[in-house]
Length: 91
Image (tube, rainbow, N blue to C red; front, side, top):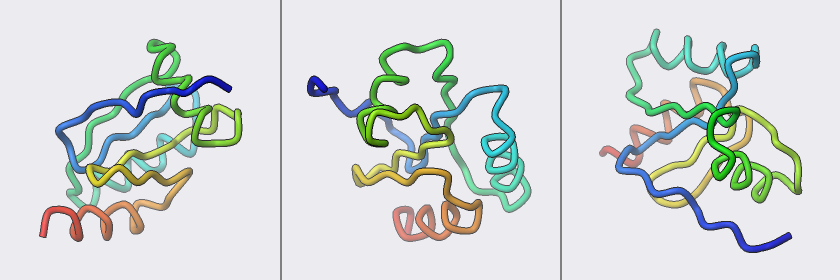
């Protein structure tokens, strides 16, 4: 697989998701409920973001994949895990 550049973001939490994905919907609903700020991108509409998601998930386009402002990422995390990481980054 070719090198894929990590997307640039100014947010502590950026979610790469798809509208048809129930796991994505659950994560976003949980973050809204607990008030955790995030930015979301639809991988269906952005081929470059889809390629990045595949590059960090062994070639699989697994959503949701979350990119944090410290450059780390998580695949299909819970809203609680994302909120904890946000608190760490924003603290």
